[in-house]
Length: 145
Image 1 (tube, rainbow, N blue to C red):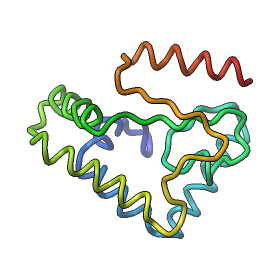
Image 2: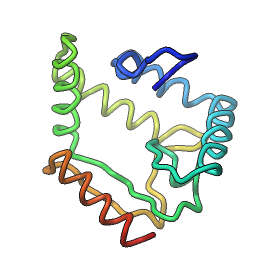
Image 3: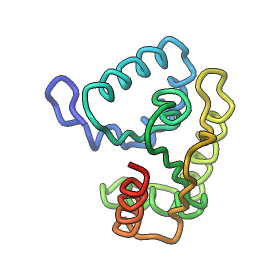
């Protein structure tokens, strides 16, 4: 991810940013601008988009929609693994609680809440490796496209 030419990939994957993004996502005007930008990107090319309202709000007519989830314990374990790799101190229970809170905030927001699109495929990645997830998603896309 780049911001004005600077690589900010690792900076946007912090706990503070995760918390803040959930708060900012409740601001309707911010969502409108982001949705418009995401639609413009998708209009110009085939894309894979990751987000909490892509299939329901941003691209409701997408050819393939996958709602990926994992059990909360596994999601917290993965997040702690990312933090550990970066040398960032963490408390597992706090990370887990923050994920639960972010999900609740995003599911209950008034504008563009987190929910599975009616025509999305539910994909549980709990007991899968990154390679297994990648391969299964590619198979779903090939079957549906």
